[in-house]
Length: 288
Image 1 (cartoon, one colour):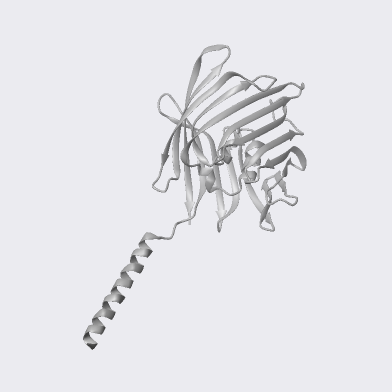
Image 2 (tube, helix red, strand yellow):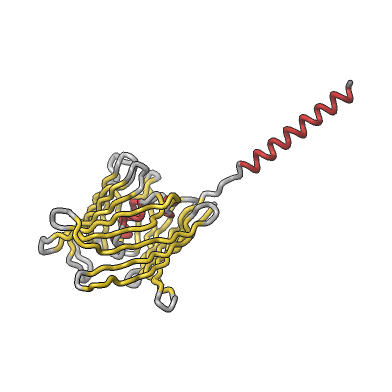
């Protein structure tokens, strides 16, 4: 009887050990991966890749430490400073971006200064889910060769939180207004910017460097499969098509977007046939 009891106890112990072992394998520790680098390269007709825009994100124990942006005309690294666990400023030499929060947990306004002189001010608006719906830039000092004194970007989302429409309105120094609209179609897999926490700062940094033309990309939940961009009339209705692009995304085994080819058709009213342009965008991550 005693031997039988010992055998049953040994069987139960072995069974429990096996169950816990299986549970451990089914629930492994999942690494936290943050977006660390984005590169946008022009694919030449020869197949050669030429850098057009590169952004690098550095972290200190999981907290954003800096945002670097390099293009043909700009090369800047903004180092962050925190107050009460929120980003208060980002500095690149004499360039300083200040963020103001009020009572909100996300910044509602920002100032971009250079050498103590205000270059631009920004006002941001969000929906109840915390997604940016509008950002307005008022330029106090115009960038070289620019006649745009104000830029307003408005973002619309579907019920799943995907940014489906992006409108841009540019007010020129002579008072005239130019409006454009971009509509997106999405994949079911996540955008790389879903793995980046400080989207308001990234949006302001990108616009302050004057290269970014579609800041709505930062607020996309899923990766885009295509976009169409239009010029708008004075009443806000669509006129002519400006661009039609398709994306071919490549994901890793964790559904992180690692690269995508963008094939664009660019239309000009004075040219009967569109110009073709191909870019390759790549994304890398830092995983803990």
